[in-house]
Length: 291
Image (cartoon, rainbow, N blue to C red; front, side):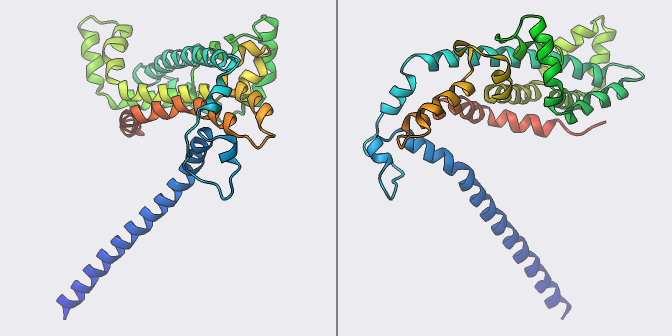
């Protein structure tokens, strides 16, 4: 009797685990479809002719495929100008984030200071301050320095503060590394900057890649700050250029050129994630919550 009851319980647990797995997978599939569907539809419209876009009911696969929308999106040369500006700002902002965040994280995580806990808490508290609060003072400073309508207001802050989240992530990763590595190198005559450059940074590649991806995506997608500081069309980033392009095609039935330019805007981010997904997951997983 007891064996039968135990067997029933085991079967009940297995059935429960099986149903939990089925429901979880079903929910993930539904969410994946909801997230992927807009991207798939954007790709479909980008390769359609105006006549195909107006067909009802709509068809997912274009027949025939047309590059007309991309030709219109690239006509005039402004897209290449927006792309060049965005690549420059994104590259410099990402570099500034990596330099300043890694240095601050090394100081918070590996160097001794009696009040570093207070400064670390104060640094984290800046994540709760809305950017709108500091916008007017920051703009006034840059205007007095004559730096508006240039990429410098979008780049300089990241060389002198980076990102609070990036500092936190790198600090947690540095704290998972054995302190004996740095201490042994220091006793052998290596300075603390040398310990940072030759020991900690090479071993923090997964976390640095995560910070790189976050900084790249945030800067590439940034619309608000370029809109505030940039006023000349030839200095616009790709996000502002897309908004200007939307004014031209957003009110028409021919959405192909708008979808083509949108696809060109998001393609670098998608490719970056596809190629770096493994290291991204590794960096998040190994940056444990320690200390």
